Length: 150
Image 1 (cartoon, rainbow, N blue to C red):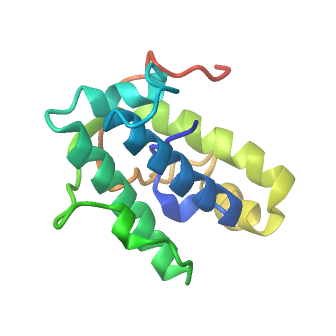
Image 2: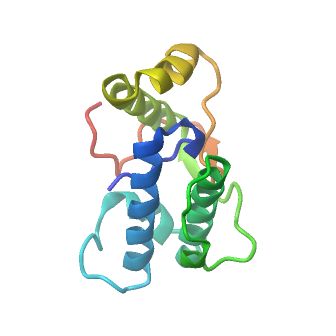
Image 3: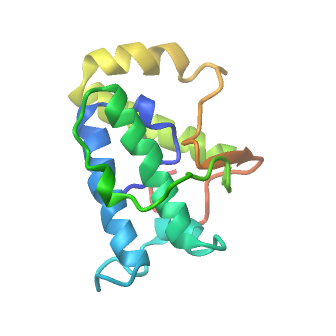
């Protein structure tokens, strides 16, 4: 499960659709409607938020909005939030850079057009990488819950 901290606009079609499905699974976990993934490290930031269900629904809302821009047919009735949170959960700048680099490696293999459009333009330059709208940036390295290669 990868619940990206980067803005959904950076994801290719495969990545955005996978994120939608994985975030829906995360929602089920946080609602106690599934037994798997209960201790998944990327859920920690949602669990620590004062209202984890509102946080994951807001996370899903912004993915839905990106899908809508692209003409995808994600089902809005899967999200139970009338007004989504924005900039509610902190994320380390190092984590954002790590995830963007990770995405670029994936895009280089599966979507050369998207790779050229965003990775060559932004990474490794110092252009600001946008976080998912639910997150706000703070100083720091890669998050402790991250399992990727550093």
